[in-house]
Image 1 (cartoon, helix red, strand yellow):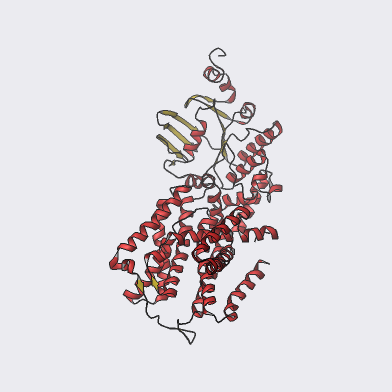
Image 2 (cartoon, one colour; image 1 turned 90 degrees about the vertical axis):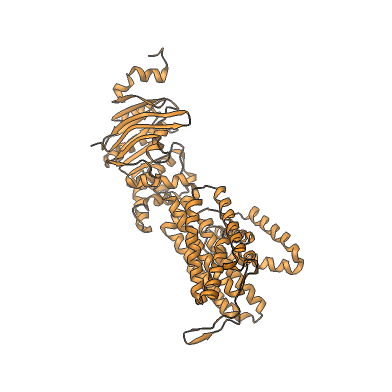
Length: 314
Length: 239
């Protein structure tokens, strides 16, 4: 049943662009996948491990800037740059984790918030590296050949499939982690840190590993962002609102579930678009109301509720 | 050689000396009871030895290796597992998952860890509840679950913090029987307990703490007749 559902989901994702040539809808689908990626990465640490980070934008921005800078200054292929963005994001996460996981509960969340602000301010002021508030711009993206086919990046379609690949990777990783020892240890950490220690679990290492994995995925997403929009500036990729949005997507979709993030991203991106069209800036009111309704009536998230209704553990 | 050697152990909380220069040895295969009036420092001794609190001073040797400065999980890896006075199961997880988490310590493979967890639940006769939510167990079952979780880490020494408090007489009897069986399996046991009949019954040796100081150390029969012990529990006139 789970496999059937997953296969159907993948088929829909692969076929979806055939439904429309409208580049705005294609853009929306790409955004859903982009947010799936971010939600899934946050879910790994926040959903399974119960470690609420309000600073994941730090890793997103690092991934975006690393990709940009490697490409613009060093001429590194942007695709390798994206990978480098993920890896550097993960490396940056290690010391943060080792320091911040000494803090428990709300203090960890506050620390992540502070770290993200520090990184944003560094990016804003380190002009030699980041061009400060001016931001960085990619004017051309070289086409790549793939299996004899040349893929050029002028249309949205290649980005869509790249986003599908990334989102599936993130969800696959989530699934594997949830089945593994790491996943079990994260649940234990979420439930009770003292108890987890008493069961022989190295709770700091468990959380650091999860944070690094999570930061790796967000770093990749940052790389994707910079290539898709071809422009980054500190307020675009280091904004607190991005960190918060990741939390929303994971919570609305369903914490500690594999498909939760894609459900959350689909619903929230759609709702934001529908209300933005009708109410412009006022759409945030409705967005907020929707969040309140979900949190009040479906604290386990949309997928979490569906799973309860279907009465299974998948 | 003593399995566990505690010497000159001291723990201060600010100006309060909770444990004062405590020394004792734990022999392989024994059941040691740790008793004393409320506030005597028994749980603090447990917390310090198991790494939850750092000692102010003193030495802790498990098979001649120091435990001082180790994090709780590292102490568990060395072979000391514990339960908590106030039971702390992972409430949102099933009974089996609770024990599997601990079995993962020496068995990274999930299906083998689960098999080991099931065998451990069998040992404490909780197998019938494997699928239940830990929060739905009765108190005595939750205490058994904690013991199972500790056993799943393959300990050399099991520290039990009041495993019988709040249990009815039948359950106390079951619990005593379990402790004896655990010892037969080659695990050394040290337990804090207020249930006097039980502790006198199962302990090979009893240590009495009072205001953080060891006031008696001997067989249960010798300890109950010790003047200091009677004074500590009942006051001057009773002694």
